[in-house]
Structures are given as C-alpha cells and as structure tokens.
Length: 288
Length: 160
Ligand SMILES: Cc1cc2nc3c(=O)[nH]c(=O)nc-3n(C[C@H](O)[C@H](O)[C@H](O)COP(=O)(O)OP(=O)(O)OC[C@H]3O[C@@H](n4cnc5c(N)ncnc54)[C@H](O)[C@@H]3O)c2cc1C
Ligand code: FES
Ligand code: FES
Image 1 (cartoon, each protein chain N blue to C red):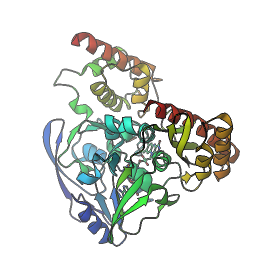
Image 2: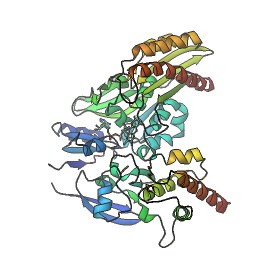
Image 3: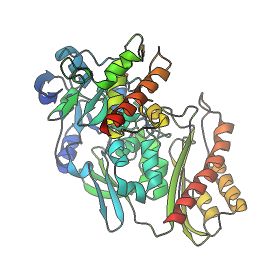
Image 4: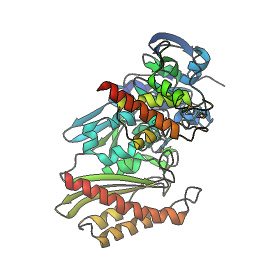
C-alpha cells in the first residue's frame, strides 16, 4: 500500500493549499475519532493527512459582539471546560459533550462531527437549531454557510473539493432565549442516537417569539423542521401548540428501520423528544 | 516515503521516534517504545484499553497518530507510579481486587487518574460516566467504581 503523508500546517491558507494540491487524496484530520476508525476499516485511504489542530483559528473559542465562534477542531473536552460558552449555549454544549466517552471527548470536534455527515451526529441538530453558520474556506476563498446546508447525505457533504470548515459561529440571541438537545439511545452512554432533537427558542413573557427545531437520525441528513418552529412561534407553549409542533416533527421524519429502532418507533419518539426539549429550552430561556 | 521524525515527552522523558504517517500512537508506544502497558482491545475507540493522557486530556492512543505527538506530553500507565511507589489508585486496585485478568486495568487506571485530577470529589454517577469508555469483561465494574471512590475519599482526607 502507498504510504500516506502527514502534514500539520499552522494556517488555514496553508491547509487549504495542501488540500487543493492533493488531487482529491487529502483528508482533514481533526480529532480523528471518525477518520482513524474509517482508515483502519479500509473505508478511507488518504494519500495526505492534513492535521488542522496546529491552526489557532481552528482550535480557539472566541466571543465577539455576542456571537460565539468555535474553531472547527476544538475538542469536546475544551468546550466542556469553557464556562462562558456553556452558560450562553447550554444545549449546543450538552450535544457536543454527548459524543462518545471521556476519551473520545478529549479529541472529538464539532467540525468533525458535522463533516463526517452522519445523520445521527449529535452536535448537528443542536447547531442547526442554534442557527449556527459555518465559515468555509477553499481554493476560491471564504464563504459563510448555514450548518444545515453542509451535510448532503450519509457520509457526504456539500463542501467543494479542497474546502475546509474553519469555524462555527453561534449568532447572538436576544435575552429570554434558551436551547436544549435530547437524544434517545438504548443505553445511557456510548451509543448512536435513535432520534436526536435540538430546540432553540426565545420567550417574551410567556409568549414564544422565536424558535428553531432540528431533528437527527430520522432522515438521510439532519433536518431543520420549520413547520414545528411555526407551531411554537406566537404560542404560550401550551399543550395544543406543543402537540402541533410534535405532529410537525413526526410528519418530517423519513427514517430507516434498523436494529436501533423501527420507522414507527423513531417517528413517535421524534414528537416525544420535541416536547421534552422545548420544556428544557423554555426553562433555560426563563432564567436568562 | 521517508519516516516522520517525532520529538515528544513520554512519562516526563524527552523521547524521539520514527513513524509512518498512519501509525497510531498506540502502535508507536507498543512497537517502537516498547511501552506495552496500553493495550489494543478494539482499535476503534470503544474499549479504552489503550487510554493515555496527552497534554492533560484523556485520549485513546488507538485514535491518535504517532505523528500528532510532536511537542506534546504523553502519560502512559508506565509513568503512573513514582519509581517503586505505586500511585494510590494502583495500590487501591490491588487492595480491593478491582481487577481480574488485568487487560483493561492500565486503561482504567489512567482514565481514573484523569477523572480524579479534574474532580477530586466525584459522585458515583460521575465515576461511572467518567469510566464509561473503559470496558471490563471480568469485574462487573462495581469493585472498580468502589476503588476509585475510596481513593477520592482518602485523598480528600489527607488534603484536610
Ligand atoms: C467510541 C466512539 C463513540 C462515538 N460516539 C458518538 C456519539 O455518541 N455521537 C456522535 O455524534 N458521534 C460519535 N462518535 C463519532 C465521532 O466521535 C464524532 O463524529 C466526532 O465529532 C468526530 O470529530 P473528530 O474531530 O474526531 O473528526 P475526524 O475524525 O477528525 O473527522 C471526521 C471527518 O470529517 C472530516 N473533517 C474533520 N474536520 C473537518 C473540517 N474542519 N473541515 C472539513 N472536513 C473535516 C475528516 O476528513 C473526516 O472525514 C463516536 C466515535 C467513537 C470512536
Ligand atoms: S484499543 Fe483503543 S479504545 Fe479499544
Ligand atoms: S479485569 Fe479482565 S477485562 Fe477488566
């Protein structure tokens, strides 16, 4: 087998240049918790491994004008230890921290979770609900892409050849906002979501004035469920509105049948998790 | 393709090695540096038998490339005792029979050290979640959990 090459550039420009020059054989290495497993299984045979963890912009967390910019390669453990980010976006942080064990958390990044493009990726519904925007850089420069537009199908992204996700920006949100992410797994740790649900909402008094809802593991990509958000916005999160939002979640599901859950089960659980995640997000919103 | 020259620190010792781009840190530790305490149980991040601490973060050595160790600090089970003086976790594991075949033990001890270094006063639930990435086929976990809780209690006692 041809030996791969390993490079650890210190700037995004350099990383993009290496990827562009690799003739499609380059793979970005963030935490490696997907990439190394896939390489070992022979599913990925990179000619060039581009380790992005020496790039400051991709490994730092910065707050600016109320926005939070998380470097795409920041590990779950570092995100966990960031008190400011945890207070500002508890749902996003808890979703990232659900990934794997403490060992996996030491390495796994949100950028890797997103670019691996698993429909069951835990951080992605929370990021989509948050309205996160990915900063993407490639041979043609930089562009901003809403996170929900990155996954294109299981294991596939919409990134052009040579493009890298540099960071994920969580936009400032008004006072009275809260977010939450819940997943259902058959065990309590170390399993893949049967369904995941991210909710981000803003309350004004008792009224819900803004909401975003996203579902994971119920379709080929994570879904932004606008109909569910519509059912919540303008309501007081009363039982009828919650049921309408849950129904919208169920209607959005296009899941697979597998050993983890049947189509009927996944669809039903999507509605259940929506109601529970809304309750947590609303409680957090009340505290802000 | 020529090999990659890596300069790093392993268990406090400045260390150099040569590796291929796709060699894992676990390959390097076991086959180059002859530190065979970290085990390969699965090679896919599921069992924790390969656990090491890199720059104060718990990591599966099977999910990290050897080349990534450049300039980092790696702690393996071989660096846990001070000379003949076993680490309190190691002593307690022997005392409380928190191991049987011992294959998982180096990883469990490293993970338990990482846990207590960050949280000297963990609840049982925190210990169970903290060690959820370490599989053990023998003990049924209970003795492991109790040994870690005991060490935490001892250390709080001495710190007082
Ligand atoms: C034991 C175990 C348990 C796990 N449990 C969970 C779980 O509970 N939930 C879950 O969602 N996942 C889980 N995973 C999967 C994995 O840990 C996550 O998907 C993780 O977030 C991947 O991040 P990483 O930084 O390790 O990515 P890497 O493995 O480094 O990269 C993943 C993929 O994305 C590409 N990539 C990475 N970063 C970028 C970038 N910035 N720009 C462009 N492409 C990029 C890589 O080339 C690769 O194809 C688990 C994995 C293991 C081994
Ligand atoms: S060998 Fe690394 S986790 Fe099992
Ligand atoms: S003691 Fe045998 S695997 Fe844990």
